[in-house]
Image (cartoon, rainbow, N blue to C red; front, side, top):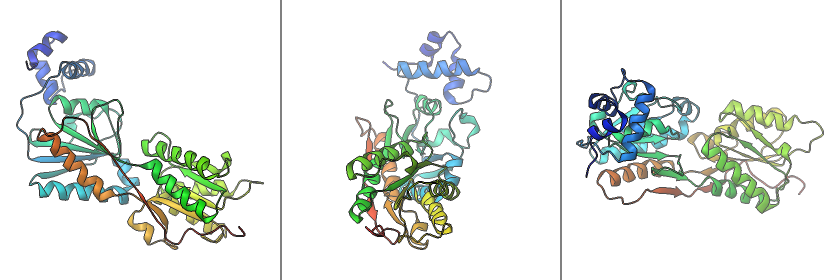
Length: 334
């Protein structure tokens, strides 16, 4: 038997009107504590609202994340928009979601017309709880929550870094540095683990001076590479694997400014294969991520859920491939 708002109100000792305001997203007059307990109770009891499936799909992304990695995320967003259009639905873009409190009534979303939501590269449990209690399906892209039943489209980050490591090992490199993204990100943690695995698998030098962390940007990559090259009495690496292409491009600038040749003195591999990676000089060897496919599969997965065709949560892990260009070669003198 379906759970009603009356039952939720009784369980929490509040009025049905209060429950209604919270579950509809109109909650300005409700305290944060009351709002959260009502949402959690609705989820625990299995409340499913009676709602007509809307005609639009919203895509949400962390604004700061998009500003830093727009060349990567633009491809995903474009693919989502095209796939939504082929299904004769409307596309809503909102670049406002961030970690922490995200009141639905402050987002420019037409909730009553939503068929579902695609959230890219981030996660906020409270926000997802709000969507769930309104019967709105969600798919995460480039992020997953192991303990939550939420569909997700993911990249095999560990395998991607392993491919970069194998490529360098086959060229003869053993002293390989790694420039990581900030460790609080899922992709960053997975790629850093991938480098740890590659270092063991391919016999790379296990020197802590060869690993640096930075902001996922060109300037961050430049500063991290400068720190690696500026260490006194430290043996210089012959190759570098970067967290992403933007970091790799920054590292390339630092290598050049130190009077070193790429790949003659130092090889470098990026990750993501953004459009800019083929245009820098020399063109960047990188790990290609199927960005457009991620977007298409996100919408396909969302509509499977909307139409009730999914009996289980999907977590789709997509493979990567190495694109060898001109920034990698055999280490000099080896």
